[in-house]
Amino acid sequence: MANPEHLSDREIDKYTLDPKIKKMWLDALRSGEYEQGRGHLKQPIKDFGEADTKFCHCCLGVLGELLIKEELFEDLRWDLGDDGREYDTVPDMVYKDHKSAEFLPAPLSLELGLERRVVSNLDQRAVIYLADMNDSGRDFLVIADWIEDNL
Image (tube, rainbow, N blue to C red; front, top):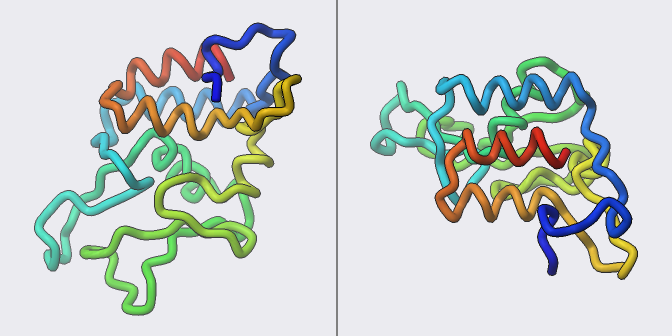
């Protein structure tokens, strides 16, 4: 799969992330407020079992937190599983009966404009590329620059 930074304008439909959401996301990634994690949208960073656990997020998890906080998508929420103990659970993000702990739920990615088709009919998903950037160790500032230039 080709990655979005190497596709020309004629090879891919432009991503259509809402400018207000984009600005909010960029500001959050550049703020230093969120600790960066890998492999999950959101996960505890203190010892399991401590009620005051703090969380780290991948770049997509930061976006999810913002969307939930601002109540921009009805029914978007974190699911803590059966026990509901936030402090020792890697939560799933749930939207329209789809859930995931590693990526934004597919319907949300589509509604945000983070998924498009390239002319070769290969599925081109910005969310996959962003997750790969995050999990390969690129920091939030580098990721924010890519988002600013490409979404």
